[in-house]
Length: 174
Figure 1 (cartoon, rainbow, N blue to C red):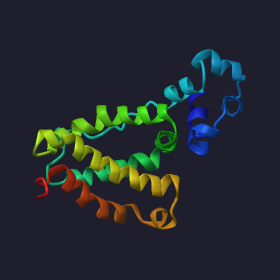
Figure 2: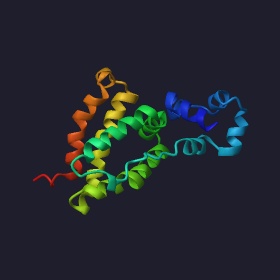
Figure 3: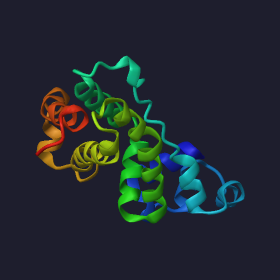
C-alpha cells in the first residue's frame, strides 16, 4: 500500500492523487487505506518518511564537502521518486511543507553546523544550500526543464558543488 502511495504521489502530486487510485494500484479496497491511515494526509505522512541518508559529517573533509553533498543529493534524487513527491507536495500543501521543514531541521541543519565557520550563520547557510539543491531538483525532476534534464550529472555536480562549498565554508561576505 505504501509503495503504491509513493508511486502515485510522485506521479500525480498530492492534490491529484486519490485514495481510490492508490487502493486500485495496491489491489486493495479503499476502506483499507482509511482503516490504517485515516485519510490522505495520514497516508502521505506514512508514505513519505524521508531519510536523506546524509553522509556522517565527520567522514567528510572540509575541502570536499560541497562536492560530496551535491553528489549525494543527485544519487538520492535519481534513486528515490519519493523525494519528487515530497517536493511537489511541499510546494502546494501545508502538511507537505511542514514535512520538508522537518527534514531540513533534523537532517540538513546538523550537517551545516559541522562546517559553518560561524554557528550563528548555520540556519541561513543551510537554507542557501537547500535553495540550490531544491531548485535544481525542481527544474530537473518536477518541472523537467529540458536543459536541466539533459545535463549530465557530473556536469551539474561541477556547477553546483563550488556554490554549496562556498555556502558551507566561506567567510561571511562583506
